Length: 323
Image (cartoon, rainbow, N blue to C red; front, side, top):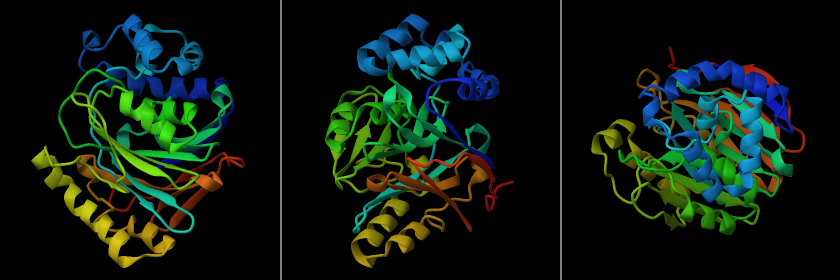
């Protein structure tokens, strides 16, 4: 995979160029169920004004950079997108310097492979891009980090794609407590587990769903189910229960050092080779929110980044087991 790290404080030519590059692929995906299956622009903008009013000016700026088209504007709202599934494992290592570690298991052909560093609306954020506006994990200049896993349920409802919810949290929140209030009220179109860790060591995992209220927990581990396994075949295929137990054992009984705990994510059972099925591990991310630092890791490769000294560039990464 070719990864890129792009920094641009305000939406401008870099972001516009990325959108022009990615948009044909995203447009095909967004329209795969037909245009009538997607909300109108008026419905998308109304939902943003109700639930995420602080970032409406940013949304409008991005729509302008994207060319002002109706389809692009509706896509960038992330409101009621087509359903999509991922794998993923995430956990909080609670040592002297708390660390959030996560594996992102997804389809190589449907992934941005992009680190974005922005200062939109005066708030510095860096993280792994999804849809060029959303994020699947990230950290902001207040020392707040966030990450997601799929919640293992087939229910699809009315709400936002979770990558935009993560972006919204990082744009508007500074603490885990503040993030908790946002995640508790935000409508999501599918079930996701969102873990948050702040600079004061406080963390939570929100079990979000489109058909029931979010459950805010103090869980330090999240894989691909919520309180109980509901989608049995998916749970078996992704080994979600086994991965959860493995992480809990490492946290409770093994007392791993930080490096040993991180290294466990690069090996089975956490590291997945199911690339042909769209659930291979694309990367491991390590977040140190108090230091405003992150790393992307692959077997034999570490790419460190700092929020205050972000390094633009690119990396070609070999994924063991990927065709």
